[in-house]
Image (cartoon, rainbow, N blue to C red; front, side, top):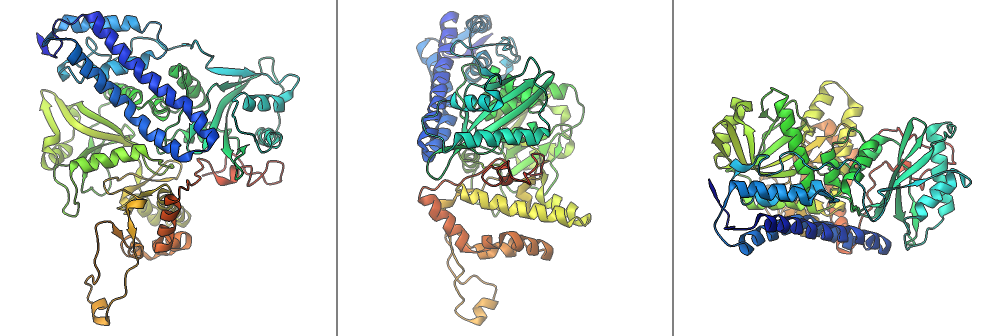
Length: 599
């Protein structure tokens, strides 16, 4: 059997070399921009931080496209037989035996070859359906993955001081001794009583800081006897441009929230990414490896691991895909598998009459979400093409919806249903359903919390230069930690592209009472006064919203947020409660907040 590739007579070894060279170029560029994150943090160049994050997202696809073109252009011919492709894979495996990023290189191989091969070749004979090279205990040549510290003569305070200084930031600390003491006292408060140091006591700290937005995060764990204690220390700039330790996070679940897919990706310099993931998994055992890779900026690897886990789940479950609970959207068709905590989104062929956009615009909006700071308020999505599902696992309702609303988006091949393009994201309870449930249970505190969170989500997105567009309750979800997150992206815009206006007075009483609009409205005109009419029809909801977020119903807030953004201001967003910050409650004071306090 022949495969049309534009690769006639190519030497399998040369092709394998071309593939590994393509990956090595990609990872060299990836590491370079991650290494520069330290300089950007030291300079406090926050605009450059956001630019670098946005640009890095394109690195992978650009290198894959380059490699595809090289295989087609440099190796003359039209056909390559199956045996040669299998030989290419075997030779490529040989090139990975001493490689420091073998799992990423396997995924790169898949990304290139699946752009050339037909989907009938998407099995382990030709691509890496299963990983081949073990990454267990893989270490780099440049430096150990983590550094170890011992509280000997210098004591625990001395070890903390040494940990911070070893990152060698070229910007002075405002008062490092004060901050070290804060960290020490916070640890004592958390543990209530400092345990006796066992012979094996040591502190292990990952060698690279984790850079995101305006912060650098030190991540490590202390080992004492059979106990392990994870910790994270955020490092920030004060108003004078000097560094300070903002807090110390000591609960694994709080550290896990730093790696939430609703936040921007980290910049971390890793020679051996698998060893970083292994260390982080020891701290956050409930966090899927796929999500950790994604949050380290290695999205394609995260997607590969996610889908391997998903296929494994399908093999060990029997439930069927059903339509996702909630009000059906006008643009996206959404289904889910009850036994798996994700939803699957397909762009419909025909949108609702009120939606003036096309498929390309929707895709652009989803890409925009990846390139901006999501500030913990927008769900990240995994984008896939030509995904094969077992046809028998789809309920009749989902098949009817696909046929009626998205017939061009799928095809059936034997016992497989192939979806040509879809997005996958974590499943959340829609906010409108959550509020209905709180109302039925007469749970006023739960309702107030959700409404306050809803307004905070809108406010923080605006401060991060994102206008949600369609702010109906159904377009927001609530996480298991009680945080409200936005997940409907077809109408999002940059705040700076919106014209926030007051409704002009009517020329006369009859015009005002007619119900007709007496003023012109351009495409990006928004009238905050109207939000209450469309969003706050229920009296109790209106009362609670106005209690916490009355300013969102006037142009003053929106225009003020725009002005700050246009002036280059970058807002501070903390992925932990304000009351845990040392600046708000220094540990030596009475009433230090519990690190177990709810969000």
